[in-house]
Image (cartoon, rainbow, N blue to C red; front, side, top):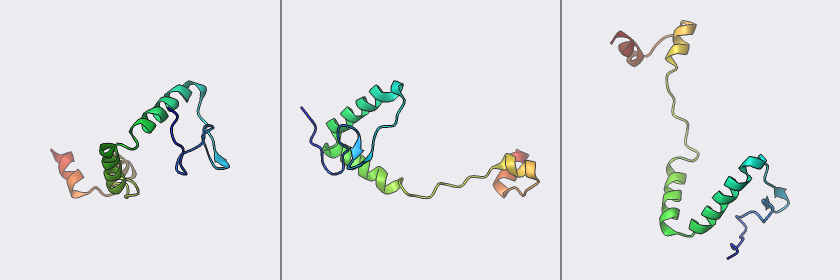
Length: 90
């Protein structure tokens, strides 16, 4: 069965209108096509859509969490946070 192509999907060449294409190494062509087939299989499944929407809501576009680069602070003579200092003492 041929997947129904909508405005959100690329054409058979991987283009979205006049733009796009598939720029992947030859060794990745089959895995990319396998992923595409799997997506077309599940994209209308309510459970898949619920999980996708949850991930889009909670992860996509959110700020990247900050973390302390303690070795960089140490190497540069910078200040450590209390938590890093306590960890260093233990």
